[in-house]
Length: 218
Image (cartoon, rainbow, N blue to C red; front, side, top):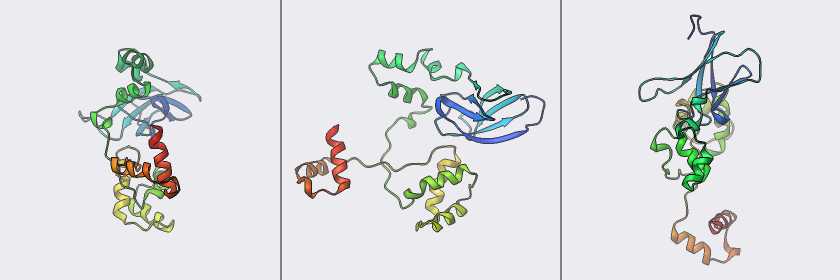
């Protein structure tokens, strides 16, 4: 950091290709240390843009990248070491995918993962009364409202009938710079699937009909 006092501090989400938007320009962060939509802090002076994670790594560091501050608009300031290809010995995800016979998205997922927890399959989360209000919760958080009590009061005015604790729990990932935990549908058990198949089509509800269709497509 230069000798000048930090003039600006901002929170921004990591966007496509691990780029963070600031002052009408894009600055790169290391693909191995961030995930899409993760929240990062920008500390800018007149000559530098320094990007920090909102959560320290295992060594206690939050520093992600240091860039010269660009004058103008529409520039992409990219450190090649931040690319996922750097973690693959200079090869691209597509090249490695062809060599291993894997889907390119699978290679990219494992390349960007910082820990094994990010690639293991998590158990499905049960639906919640808060689910219809997650978009509003994310929007208000991005706008700077981080008080769970106030957020819960706003949701109640929109029709939410759940408890404050559920709002506080749902916003916990946001405080760590992570995306909201979206509900994931539980796969049917073998017995459920067999019952769906042998039951007459006209006896299924719309939800079950759609789930059966997706099941049979696999």
